[in-house]
Every structure is written in C-alpha cells, then in structure tokens.
Length: 303
Image (cartoon, rainbow, N blue to C red):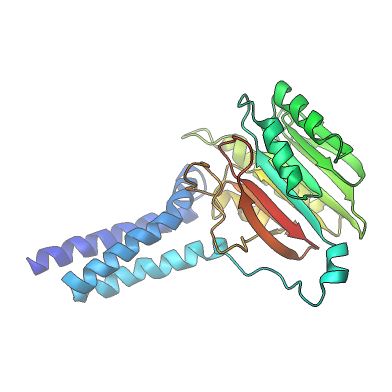
C-alpha cells in the first residue's frame, strides 16, 4: 500500500512539473498555465503534506516541481510599499495616482465605476470596454473633477491635469482599442498608455499577442522619461506574451500583500488587468471594487 501511494504521489509530482514547465511556452498553453499558476501552489502544498505523512521517500520528488513553481511565480509576487514617511511633504507633491478598470460593456455601471474611482482621489482615471452609453455616462460623471479627457474607440482617459500629444493606437490591428497621452503632472510630464487587449480563446489568441507585441515596440521607441501603461491586457501576470513588454518596462507588483488578482470580481482567480512603469517609483499598488464591473480596478501611486 505504501509503495502504491508513493508511486501515485511521485506521478502527480512529475505531472505538475511538466504542467509548470509548459508555462514558458508561448501561446494559449502558456496563458492557461499562467492563469492557473498561483493555484498550483496549493496543489503542491497538498501533495507535500501527503508525502510527509504517507510516503516520505517521495518528498524530494515533490520538492522539484515546488522549486520550479517558485521560480515561475516569482515575477508575480507582491512587494512592499515605497517609503513615504519622512519624505511625505516633498514626495506627495510629486506623486501621481492612476486607476484603471474594465467597466464591462452594456453593464450599465460605468457611471458608478467612474464616480467611485473619482472618490478615491485618483489623478488619472482610465476606463476600457466602453460602449456608447457607458462612455457618455462616464463623461458626465467625471467632467467636473477631471476636465481633461481623451477617448478612442472603447478606451478613455480622464485627468485632473492637461493632456497633450494624444494619439490613438492600433498596435498592429485594424481597429483602435488603445491610446497614448502625455499627462502634464505638476512635477513632470508622464506618458500614459491605456489599452484593452483582444480577448483570448483557444486558437484565437493571435490578435492579443499582436497587440501586446505592438505595445512593447511602442514603449521601446517612446522617448518619454516617465511612462506608465495600464488596462485590461487579457494576459495573466506571468504570461509569456508579456515577456517583450517586461523587457522594456517594470511590471508593477501589488504592495497590499496580495497577488492583485482582478477577475472575476466575485472571486478573483487571475490578474489580467496589468500595470507597467518606466522611469517611475511605485509608492503603492493594489485593487479596489468599483461599480458593478466583473473586473476589480487597479490603483497605482507613483512618483
């Protein structure tokens, strides 16, 4: 009986090792593994406990995929918030808070999302998956506090500070669902990208990958000293499709002690709403619920 248990546990460990290794394969396989990666840690923990009690000789076999899992998930682990204590007076003057949310088209909740995000004290609000009605509702809700705005297709940005050099982006596709603007913040201008990547379905992830590669190329050629990219990337944090963008900008780690999972809002399983920065220090990063969207909003404070 002990030998049988050991064989089953060892087989499960080897299977998990192969699954985790597949997370580096570009395409739908890598995306699927990246989405499941945080939860595979629980499976590994259960296997390790079972091995300790039922078949200690296979513990080493379980430790191999466990170590590989740690290496794979490490880029998505949270970090600590930036220091603001003694520097608070001068630092706060140079800080910029950017929030972003997929408001879910045809949900009727864009006005509520916009209002609640404005109440957070954000300097810049980015909304994606806007249809005609939700765009109008968001504009009406934000016009008073955020007089500067720019929208392209289903994405939009609202700011307390003037916007310049606004441009739509196709990112390799034939339609526009991304934009770039310069936010004229008091301390220095910050280039802001907002995007809603194409959806991912088995066999139909090429449009998303094209957009993510296009964004990486755009960021690489952008002369801005300070830059932030936000939106619904439709890609988990460790997705291989984000590798090119990670090489050009820093992925923003959550600072609230969580993995920053954003979807679905009822029980977040995966982080597909991402934030990348270049030339900026992250003071704090987390998520909040707003409106009745199926996505949590990302909240990022930088300086």
